[in-house]
Image 1 (tube, one colour):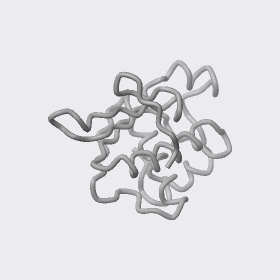
Image 2 (tube, rainbow, N blue to C red):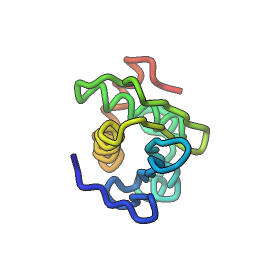
Image 3 (spheres, rainbow, N blue to C red):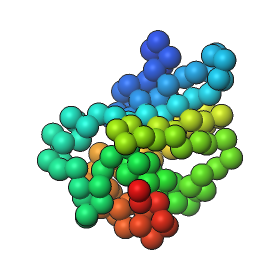
Image 4 (cartoon, one colour):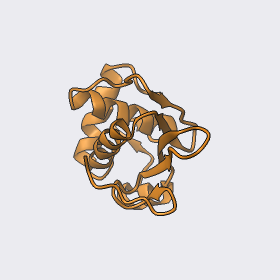
Length: 130
């Protein structure tokens, strides 16, 4: 597992631009993965559409799930709850290890245009597009 650097229950750097949130000591006892840095995305890629695939919270969710499939793991394992909205990609996990695995894949995907393009194809193939 990657070293996770939680500061005030958040790791904003290891999987940037995704944020990993440690709620294991809360009443929910979970770990959350979030993306909502649209300014960063627009600055990096200059668009909100790649391969005619709309990049919003649900769109990123589909790309993250496609990244799990491409890595040979279950797109929606037990204990992972996708809970995205139009402006935020959001996953809730029961297990830190599954959250970290997903965060690694999400980070690798979103930081490379070629990877995003491949995942738009995989998302469509697996009916994961919004």
